[in-house]
Length: 361
Ligand code: DNO
Image (cartoon, rainbow, N blue to C red; front, side, top):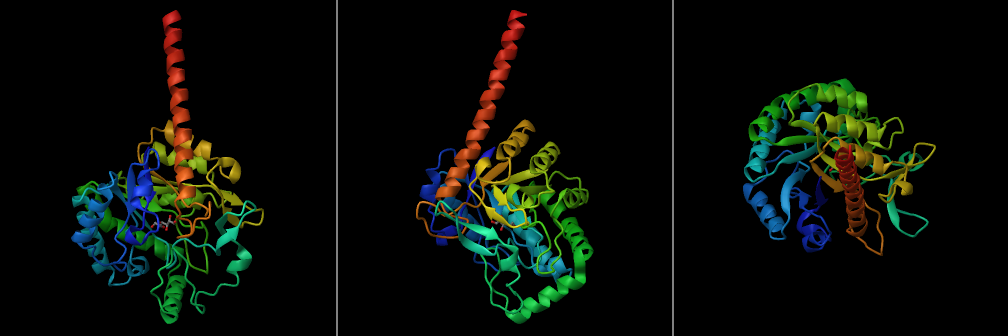
């Protein structure tokens, strides 16, 4: 397990030197943020980002995200230009040592929450998804902006995009993913870069937009598109875990066994009876997911890939980018490493006991 931390570049209120102080932290997950989706990432920007990260004795092996232009997802004729750019970006990143590229295939909106500062009983704040709040959000009329969303669309553009996706439907979106992968994976294989598809967050259709990476059936179908090991997942426990039907530990085991998890986002969520959820602290008892079982599944399947603590609450009076403060994510990193170390100790004990048995037998 290679522990990573997401960093949003110069604009990020969390500094690289603080991240470096988290025990066991090995690398930074980041991106070139000042280039619109679909454009080429200037090589100088990649070089500069890498140098900045490495000057703090951290590695830059994982990019999150290399965004997929909407024209690719919609299957417009212009997609071929954007696919060429995507291929070139893969080559540039590989040239500068990047090993994993995280991306998603969610239409228009990336991850969606309805409130970003919901106060918990302990006075910390967190991100939540409450259906009754969603019903009051009209993204075609209101100028809404949430952290995962691309704020550059005008309302008219948003309306057009939404309509185009409704016409396309889930099968059309899937076909466009097949086309995209057919063009991207040969380059990834050539460059020895692992592509890591992030599941839909939350794992169901929202605002009538189709979602196609939400459950085991979806993921199986997607992985069957191509057998190459470069075609893999960002296994996000908190995204998949919002649907009680997704058995997250068993999915972690299944896809780690197949060698298809290149990157894992580990976080916990607390599910309500009505399907709403809040993002909780990482600890199993704080939410609904059995984090120990998820980490154990990765451990037992010999997972050696990249991991990052995912969203954290705002605690200790911290302010900043919702979900991406320093403190709670640092606690999450330590918690996951604690489980991992416990599993290593157990295994060693088992081995010693086994050797002793052999000796005495
Ligand atoms: C949310 C993140 C996502 C993720 C993208 C990957 O916090 O996990 O925004 O980066 O979906 O493309």
